[in-house]
Image (cartoon, rainbow, N blue to C red; front, side):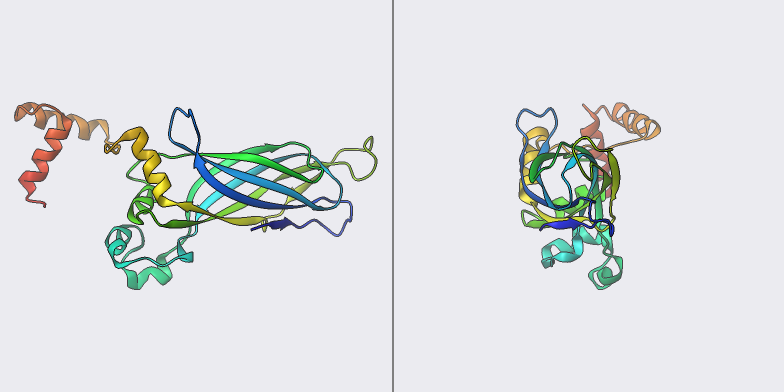
Length: 226
């Protein structure tokens, strides 16, 4: 899982490797949050005085197979299974900025990821569709390294983290689902425009219904949907 940060031909440029482990629920968070551990290792070159990293986390949907029971839910995201070879692309989950302290040999840093339940997001629909099975993740790194090529009193130089710097990880989808349910129960959020909500509320008043959920249920029942 360790991916080196390739430097230039200059032998005094730091070379780093990254690996990610976890996740686990973040305790005492106000919103459902998962915590990964990011391990940074110096593979060569001088020590890194500091670094500013941007971490893009994606769900690499093509790195696993899907049972027939998930096909219907996934069809809304990727189309019918016969199209998946063309339509399946990694799903962008989140982007995190991390400030890395001095790295002489190794350093471990937390990566915290908030878990929303917006039903319009493809990531939310995907994580609900796959049940409790493991989900492959890709962590892509960019940013700037700060280092001194010679003596500690030498000039502070910078180097870019190359676009090729990445590593793999895994998320048990069941862990995400349990964490979201712990915070929100069985009530996912549904975002409506003000105009749509006003029309829904007018329907509720007209039919003397107790609340928005009763209004939605009434509309579904009237449509004949199962």
